[in-house]
Image (cartoon, rainbow, N blue to C red; front, side):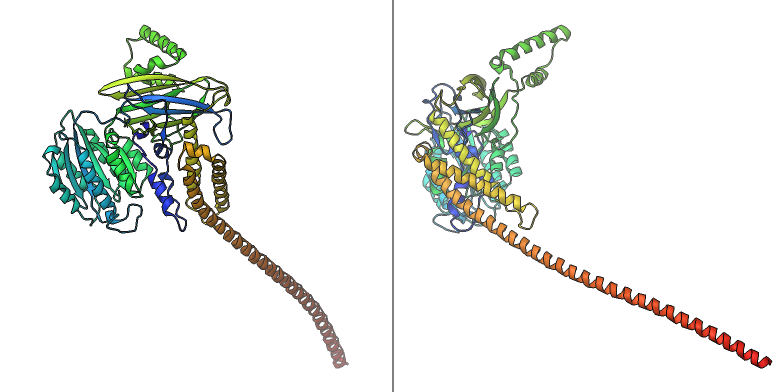
Length: 595
């Protein structure tokens, strides 16, 4: 049930991308695969149904279940359960307004972004599911329907189901055709027009979008959901097609009463809005928070929440109604502090005390904090769908982990606490099947996400390409190792996680094509480097030859200059001799004349 704590309800978009990539290399975006989405696709045996509380926790602990069997690694599987799991919706009447996307892209196939079809189009599937949804409503429920392209259109005003003209409404739905652009805000305006300004009390009120999300952006979605949630009109988005984005699911999960689904196959749409109608659209609790604290173990990671892809672990905020669950040492410190405050000042306001005590209680970590939790379906064998939150801790020896749960239901806050004993070693306490299953799923998602992080290649001529190619080989090797490990334990893995080995095999085959393309780029890169080195060598040889020729020419010029200098000296001597001879001749002639 906690798996329905808004956020990613499934991993349908990732699975669809793997199914569709038969040719070429089309790795899906890493945001299509989340721990929460994969956890929610499976069911778990968690010790029987919850009979009393709107939200409760069943927890199991084990050591050494990771890939390396690290004895210092501790796993705690927390399963959020509800007395509403598998039960029909409550007696309160509902106002349901469906907003149906009839833009041109709704003519495309549900599992493709390009293929147009009429029989198996997104719109055809949505209309079929919608006609099956209406009979799920009770006579005192109210139903309204709007469509949108670039403009919104009211098809059915909000009226009691008992007053619906069913045949006429079904005919109008049947005649809807796809065409035009997509402006989701236009659909919202039509829905608000149907709902009216007044918010009746004592009724469930939900706005259900059936759309391929072609026009949706996270910021727009955030504002849209927030506005309607404040009005008491909760919003559900059913994204039809492969366009799931984790950031969209996270935006939805921030707002009270809202959730998000991704549909990539025919049966998924009917399951979401018809078969699971009693659980997907009727919240079990609000403002749900679970915290963890331990004196001997250090929390390192949390998986299975709408925010489990964030690296930062959030410190829990101290609340008066959970104070009794804190360690005795902390409670003693708080008592001493309050006594000192009473002696010095008249008192501090609660927000100030809350900030101080939250600071003093560092080490109490928030495991999950969401606005809404929905109930889940229950399988025929008693297994509950989704609801897993997996904690990874480190520490030696035994000890315990304290889990504190706080939530709001029917306008009141409830708190409960559970201490989970940690086994001293892997042999002293065999791991429950539920936690074995959770760790296997976590390892699958971790290995696939590690490879998807390398989806976008680095340019082969860039400085970081060699490092990128090594990371690709390392991530692909991890996929192969996990695939081999699962194959060696095929019977156990298939029993715990039906279909998981096939999914891993399909993704590994896709990753292999990508890895080969990276190898090809690396070989091309090496060939280019070799060619460059050869050209550089030839250039160096030519430069050396030219340098030798230049040196020879310089030597020849120097020799010529020496010869010229020598000739100049010889010519000077001849000129001097000539001058001396002329002077002697002149003297001789002068002497003859005198005689």
